[in-house]
Amino acid sequence: MMFNELDPLLHSQIRLAIISILMGVEEAQFNYLKEKTETTAGNLSFQLTKLKEADYIKVSKSFKDNYPLTTVRITAKGRKAFEGYVNAMKKYLQL
Image 1: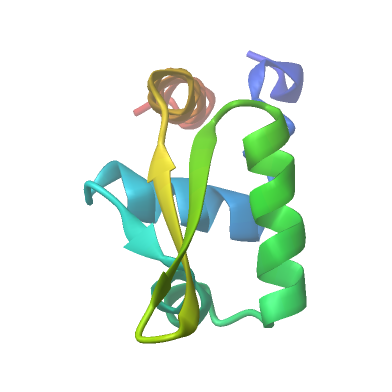
Image 2: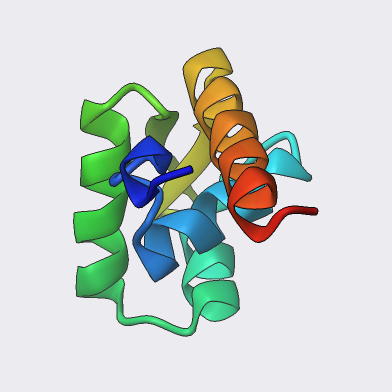
């Protein structure tokens, strides 16, 4: 097995972390993802944009108590991509 079977979009530490978190929840708020991934708001925004452009996630923006609220959820395409990535890693690691 070669590394080219690994989804390059998910082969980024932060993007993989985001998708991993989203696999276990219905949705996650921006600040929760920022805390869990231990990254900056700017970097998280950039990585979310990459995942959104690939249709791996849906991003919803609203307001809560006059504060902006960004909520993220994984799409079916994102789930499939993550599962494929995990399976490719298992093959590579011969698990």
